[in-house]
Amino acid sequence: MQSRFKERLSYQTSPQELEQFIKQTKLDHSTRAQEPERPEKQIRQERTALHDAAEFGYPNFALTFIEHGDDINAVDAKGRTPLHVAVQAGQEEMVRLLIQRGADVNIKDNDGLTPLHFAAVLRSVTLARLLVQAGANPAPLCFLV
Image (cartoon, rainbow, N blue to C red; front, side, top):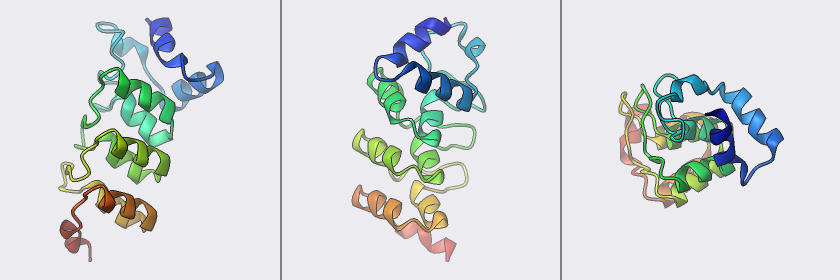
């Protein structure tokens, strides 16, 4: 199981980077016992491996997951997509990648917040600009003022 998962990821990464990703995201391979070749399956708190790659800034892994059919707009228990968590973590490269690959920039989480809300909270003009240029609607931000 674990070796197939590593195999799937390793074609674009070094073994050290792969081990670091697994340690940092605390991937629990036992949760994949039924479908070991589908790492987008729920890992913890209904997050996917793509959520973790987005949060911790692993674009090579994210690209691998996306190219193998993982849902770029998968939501976790809070209704947040990988784009939400990438913005929240300030991962500019990941935000660019997710937008380029078709992530929904206007999707709302369980609290009605979009990725643009998180960029505003971070006061990141760069991330906000990326999102707006990709079609994010700034109108819902008025309740933050």
